[in-house]
Length: 185
Image 1 (spheres, rainbow, N blue to C red):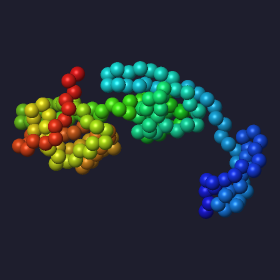
Image 2 (image 1 turned 180 degrees about the vertical axis):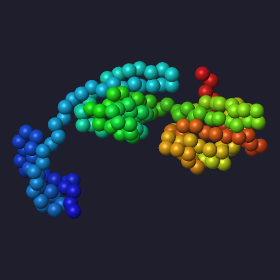
Image 3 (image 1 turned 135 degrees about the horizontal axis):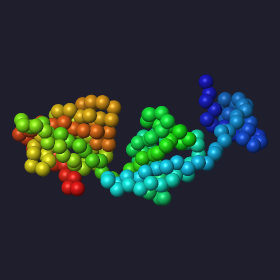
Image 4 (image 1 turned 90 degrees about the horizontal axis):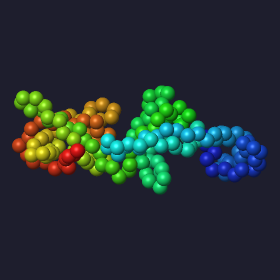
């Protein structure tokens, strides 16, 4: 079955087109979606600093979490979508607010260390693509620890990229591991 992705426009009238497929030779009629320009609210966050902007787009444009957008010659990842329906993607017309983070911002990891007398919480920086796995040794603020569990954006995982991690659960270890940069704010 041909999907008619490679075609030639034979005739055009308004939003209607008569097309001929270059692969199978079939001639077919198509109505192009009307592109209505709209503005959507976007929040650009750089850690605790954020600013609200208006993005110009068309109402049928689909935005997806993790998608890379260019705004004012800078690149941003879509971090969260506040829309009519909760999900990983949404059409621009359904979006209340789009949350963006700069492409070059490191990921902030939330780390919980289980101790004999309670828990300690840390925040550390990591590259977005760095992978952490259960059983890895890490060192942070003088503590040597081993990763026991990783809570990712879609549940507990044995390993995940830093950009997908919501929290890392650790216990004390006798081995030194890779050292993480500590958030001193």
